[in-house]
Amino acid sequence: MISRFIHQVRVELPEATEAAAEARRRLADRLPRTALRRMTHLGLLVGAALEGAALGSDDAIVYATTFAETRSLEDFLTSFPAASPLLFQTSIHPGGVQQVLIGRQQPVARLWPLAGRLRLVEQALLVALLEPAPRVALVGGEERGTWMLEHHMASGHAFAFATVLTREAAGAAGRVVFAPGARTVEAGPSLQDFAHALAERRPLHWGGFGGTWTVTWA
Image (cartoon, rainbow, N blue to C red; front, side):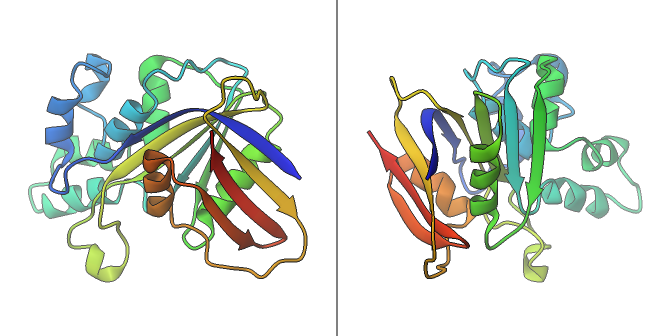
C-alpha cells in the first residue's frame, strides 16, 4: 500500500458562462497584475486554486488536463482573417500551471505534466504518490470550449483544483491510498468528477489497473 495525506484543497468552479475576461475581473486582486492580461482562462483558474499553497523549490507539481488551452486556441482561430496578436500569444502560452509559476517566479523541483482521458486521475495520483518530494501539489483543470465541443476536443465546463499531498498525517484533511492487487478494473472518476469530489469532500473508491484506489476525508 502506498499513500499520501491531503493537507490543502482549493477548487475553482466558475459560473458556466464565465470566460477569460470575466475571470480576470473576478480574480484581479488575487493574481499578479503584471501576468493577468496574458493568462488564459485555465491559467487564471489554476492560479486561484493554488492561492495559499506555499510551494518551495524542493516541492513537486503533478499537472493533469485533457484539453489544456483549447478555448484560447478557439478564440485565436475565430479572430481570423484579422488574426489577433494577443490571442495568438495566449494560444501558444505555456500551460496553465506554468503561467502561475512564471508569474510567481516560483521554482519547483519537478513538474510532471500529464494529458489523457479515461484514466487521467489514476495516472496523476500514481505519479504524485511515487514522487520522491516530501510535498506534491496535484493540480488539474480545463477551459470551457465552444465550437470544438462538437468535435469532442474541448471540455464542456471550466474548472481547476489544487491539493497539496504529503506524508505527514498530523492536521491532514484526508488521505489518498493505492492498494496493489488483482482487482476488477472499473471506470475511475473523470477529471471533472474528481474536482467536484474534492470540492464536496466526497470519498471515492474504485478498482484501477493493478490495484484499488481510495480517497477518504477526516
